Amino acid sequence: MGPEEMEFGFYRSGEEEQILHLFHRTFPKIPRTMEEWKWEYEQNPFSPPIIALARYQGKVIGQEALFFVPMKSGENRFLGAQSVDTMTDSQFRGKGVFSRLARLTLEEGKKRSVPLFYGFPNRNSYSAYVKKLGWLEVTRVQRFIKVMDISSALKARVQSSFLCSLLGGMAQPLVKLYFWGKKIKVEDFFLEKVKRFGMPYDAFWRGVRSRFPLMVDRTSQYMNWRYLDHPSGEYQAYFLKKRGSDEILGVAVLRLVQLQYPLGSIGEFFVKDWNGETAQVFLTLILNLLGSQGAAIVASWILSHSPFVSVLKKLGFRLRSQHQALIAISPDGSLEEGYLSNPENWYITSGDYDMF
Image (cartoon, rainbow, N blue to C red; front, side):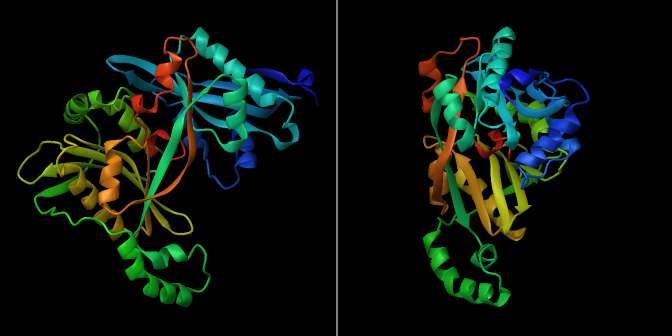
C-alpha cells in the first residue's frame, strides 16, 4: 500500500459519509454528526472549504481540511483558513499521506491567493507541519481554570458518591482559598442573552477590534454562524450592560458541557474598556451564571499577552497548561514570517479552536 497506489485529490460531493466514518475511527471520543459536518463545511457563509483527500481503492483513508473565516490584519480585511480534522487511517500511517495532503492544500491556498492558514495541531501532526512543511510556531496557548465545585470535579476520579462528597467537603475550603478571587460589586450591571448578533453588536465590535492586530474578524455574520447557528445549540452568548442603559459594554460566548464533570468554557470575551473594572464585573457575572448552571470547573484559552489574563488571575483563575501550539503560514506570501511569528500580533481565544 505505497503512495503510488493511492489517489490524492480534493473532496467530491457524496464523500462526506466516508469522511465522517474516518473521523469516528480516528477520534472515537469526539462526537460528530452529519449536521455538524454540513454546518462547518457546506453552510460556512464565507467561502467553500479546502478538503484534500487520499483514497485507496475508492475508500477515503486520509484528509487535510481547512474552513474559511473573516480575518483582519491591522485595517486590512481578508479571508483566512483554519486547518482542522487532519486524519489518516491507522493502516496507512507512516506512508507520507499527511505530507502529500498538506502540500496539496498549500498549493490550493496559493492558487486562491489566501494570505493565511493557521491551526492548532496535535502532537502527531505538529512535527510535520513545522519541520517538513514550513509552518511557523507562533506560540503556545495558555489554558486557565477555576475550580467552582471540587465535589463534582472529583467524580472524574472517584467512583463513590459518598467519598466524593466527603473529600469535597474537606477540600472545598482549601480550593476556595487557592482559587480565591477579588470580590467585585456587580449590582449596577446585568447580562443580556443574545438571540442574534446584529447592527448594535457590529458597532460595538468596530470600536474594540483595533486593539489587536491579527485575529478573526468577529462580525455579526461570523458570530451568528460560529455560535448561534451551530447545530448542537450548546453556545450561550451574552452582552454586558449597565442598568438603565442599552449600551453594549462587553460580549461573551460560553459553553457548558458534561464530560466526566460539568465543564464551563469561556469561548469569547471582549469588553469596551479593559482599563477599568468592567472586565472584572463581566467575568464575575459569568462565573455566577456558570456556577448556577452547575459548572464544576470553568476554563479559558488565551495568549499570555492578552489583557484578559490579568482579569482571569484577579478572579481566581490559575494557569493549568501551556502545551497547545498555534501555528501559521502564508500560502500566497503576502504576510511576512516575522509578522506571523510574533505572538503579540495575535489575539486567540477558546472560540478560535474548532473543538470548542
